Length: 360
Image (cartoon, rainbow, N blue to C red; front, top):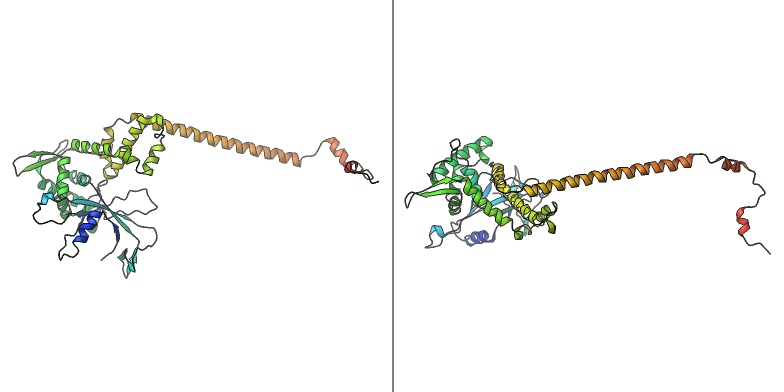
C-alpha cells in the first residue's frame, strides 16, 4: 500500500483518530469525479512548488462523514467533501516520522521516496454538481423537465462515465458508482436545492430541474463574499494584483471595488467551466475598470518605449563622444606645435628651475 504525508482539517483527523480502535471504523472514502473546471478526470493533476502556471485542481475527492451516534438521525450528520491536491518537488525527497519514511510509493522493484505532499481542503459540492448536471443532454434550446433526483443522477452518471472512458483509459476514468455515491451525500442534496428549481409533488416525491439562473445567483453571492476587503487583503498575492493596476490609490476607490469583484470572479473561475465564468462576468458592469486598465497599459507602453529611446540616445551619444576623443588623440597637432617639437632645446634650462630656491 502506498504511503503519503497529508494535511487535513482538524475535524477530519479527529474523526479518523477516534475510530482507530474500532474493528470496523467508518473511514473516509475517496471518489473520482469530473474536474470542476474542465470536466476532465485524471486521478490527480500534480504541480511542482516552482510552477504556478496551472492551479492543479485535482479530480480526486475525499468524503468525510462523521460516525453516526446512537439515536442520531442521518440528516443531523454533516457530511463534507474535500479536494485532494498533490504538491511534488522536482527532485527526490522524503518525509520522515521518527525513523520511518512516510512519503513512498511502490515502484517496479522497490519503494520509491518522492516527497509528495497531499493537501486536502473542503470544497463546496455545488462546484462538483455543475459538470455532472450539465452532462445531461437537454433538448435543443430547452430547459429540461422536472425529474426525481435519482433519475437525474443515473442519467448524468452514465453520460459522465461514457465521456470519461472515451477520453482516457479505464483505470483513470470516472465510474457510475462514484457519481451515485456523491449524489447520496447530505451535502450534495443540500447543494441540489441551491442549484435547481424544485417542485414537491407529494410529501415523499420531490422533483428537480437544473437552473442556470439559480447558479448565477449562487455564484454572485459567493463573489460578494470574496470581494470584501477582509478576504482580498488576507493574501499578499491578491493585493499585488490590485496594486499593479493602480487600484490601491485613494483616487481609485470606485475602481477598487470593481477590481475586487473581477478578482473574485477569477478566483471562482478556478472551479468553473470557461463559459460559466464568462456568463458570470457578463452580469457585472466592468466597463470603467476595463477602460482604466487599457489606459494604464497604454501609458506604461508609452513610458517603456520612451525609456528605450532615451537609453538608445545616451548610448549613441557615448559612442560619438568616444569616437571624437579617439580622433583627437590619434590626429596630428597644429603647425606651431609640430615646429616646436623639432626645435633644438639642448642647453636650455627647464621651466621648473625658475621656481626652485637658488643655492647660496
